[in-house]
Amino acid sequence: MNVTLAVKQYISKMIESSGPGMKVLLMDRETENVEHLIQELRRPKYSVYFIYFSNVISKSEIKALAEADEQEVVAEVQEFYGDFIAVNPHLFSLNLQGVSRGRSWDPSMLSRCTQGLTSVLLALKKCPMIRYQLSSDISKRLAESVKQIITKEYELFDFRKTEVPPLLLILDRSDDAITPLLNQWTYQAMVHELLGLNNNRIDLSRVPGISKDLREVVLSAENDEFYANIGTNIKNLMEDFQKKRPKGQQKLESITDMKAFVDNYPQFKKMSGTVSKHVTVVGELSRLVSERQLMEVSEAEQELACQNDHSSAQQSVRRLLQNPRLTELDAVRLVMLYALRYERHSSSILPALMDELSRRGVSERHRRGVENVYTQHQPLLHDTLDQLIKGRLKDSQFPYLGASSLRDRPQDIIVFVIGGTMYEEALTVYNLNRSTPGVRIVLGGSNIHNTKSFLEEVMSATGHVGDRAPGGSRHGSRR
Image 1 (tube, helix red, strand yellow):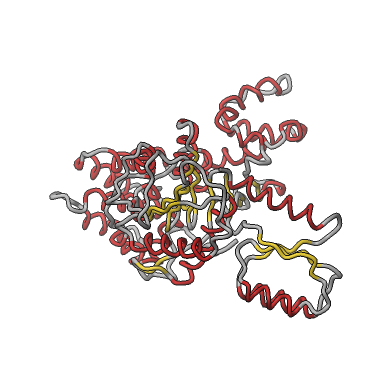
Image 2: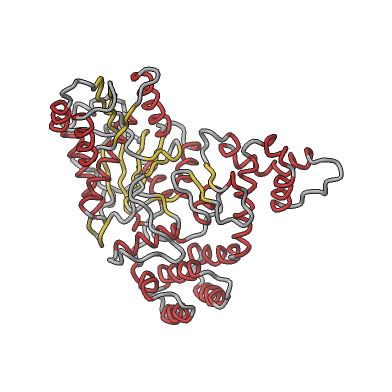
């Protein structure tokens, strides 16, 4: 299963079907888009139209388009299912922020998530059995909504039967509120956390001394061989540049030295291809880690998440909150992690930590966010998938929708996280795919979070719709 390949194949079909020199219109199936198209066909600007919808279109909408096409300029209308963002081969997003209100769906978001998720299933040609998180009413609602579409459009979902049916597992972000609060240390996750990764694009315009051609860069394994093998390449990059530097050039000792070297010798930019882009990105990551003292912050986060030593944890958090270099975002996330772990501890110092946030000037709405993020911390995604693959995931916690259930180990698994997933979770899926022969997993979410967007999601769900997370910004709900 590969969501990137599925979308690429659809695009190739569109180009081939329309012929050379033709203009192709790919549309989301939104009512306003259909209305715009009807108006266009009544007064056509072109002699022929090839129209492709990225999701299922109703018979009534097809009829309305046909009636508007009085001049018979429409050569083709098709459904090519790509109503989602294919981020990596095993990762997709719907780019939706603020999908719920408390423990209930925003109705428009339920409809959009249903459309996006059924589009993924159709693109992958899967008609799955469905399991959902019992403790989450919104998970059950989405499962039922997707099932209704599969039943209604049964002809579209009439794919070749496999020995073991595919499985759709619907989870709720509230199942794990800790992962989005932790600093991440893998490349893609770090980029998203510290710089922001929007549809595989990074805005570097605020980086000190950035060159014009690097103000916005794209990270995509499809078109960037260096990025596709980033783990090996970062390790070997310094050695390669050492060999290629001119005689007399001082030895390169750090990422900063390498960045300066690339900037000062333009001919090496061409030679290195996309390497200079990654040198710039890694250099900025290194600067932010040092400036925000994130190694020390992360050590405290890991202690809060993984250890059970309240005395040591509260000392670490208190010490960091006294540090003037600690950002507001990092201060809030540390107190949130403490609250999640030790709010009910007999010696909890949460009130004192809340007072410290106030003293640091953290706004009241962000301090309320600490209280709103309380949730029962159930198994992380890795544990959930591990139990699922081993056939040990309890039906009492993750029931099937309907009477049927799988007898054998699932082979094709689509996981969807309401409230957003994380790049760290995508790495878990990637590793499980590599280490578990015969099992193919695709992960998706209403959004892909970093800490800022997760805090916005929390505040949106708890009624603070217009609020922003510390250092954050509002994200668009679509592309």
